[in-house]
Length: 374
Image (cartoon, rainbow, N blue to C red):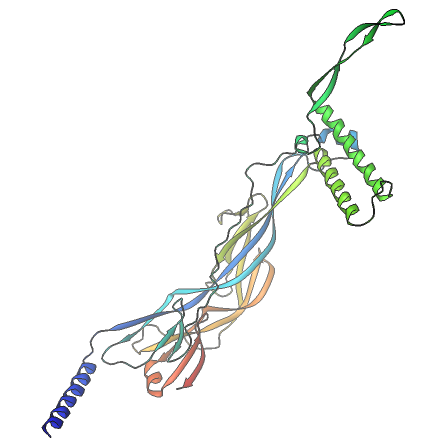
């Protein structure tokens, strides 16, 4: 009987001490979270074009009856493609925390890997994603490639020269002077190279005609196609000596742009045909802008983030149209959701706790997904 009483007294003391400790919690615990903002990633694909004149350009009209269009070394940039995609990042202007102390509400927060609010008393701490591996491919060439006949596989930079040489031999009982040339090799001159290139161009064209007329006993089909393609490439190489050529390098560059205000164009980048993407202060270059228009916000009033009422903050994102502008010309337009141009609301913690609610959010937008009773 005494043992039972002692055990009851001890149990009562334990309960009393636990309850006392629970009431006397003084350590403040903060759980920090943030709301997202959208940053637009622009992947700009450009062609960097080198125009290289042919070394025999001055002979083109005389030898081939052609007039070269490329007469000097120049380069030009051209935009071929622009892709715009949203990237969701923490908004440094929307950082919040939930504090626990002696007066606390038993709630649980779910956060994404980025720290975005995903749920209260529920929700999945999912990873929003869209963090790509940084890739930069630079195909630019520092040295302009020259057109040189010596780089052609069929070229021999030496030519055969016969030096005058005579010997005396007896022919039909008489001593006669006989020409016996000495063969030597010397480097070809520019005119020698011009004559060889012209001769090769016309030879290739003649061979192509014979092939098409089936005069070379080459059967139709893949083999004929391969031979014709090879001749076409050979002719193009020789013609470039007279007509010049252009070399195209495809380059991709990435820029980021963050909308700040509705209907306000934000400079994304500047571009010129001479320099490609250039410094944003270079006003002589053409400007490309991003602009969010036709904003709709399904809410009425902003919530003061400094209010003393404890709560969980969330966003009502703005919905609008994202435009890519070249000067004032609209190049492309798409529907978009811009969290930072929307409104911030507060959901009181005491309501969540007392009503036993479970809240889920869209982490990448910071908006409410669902409110459920547990």
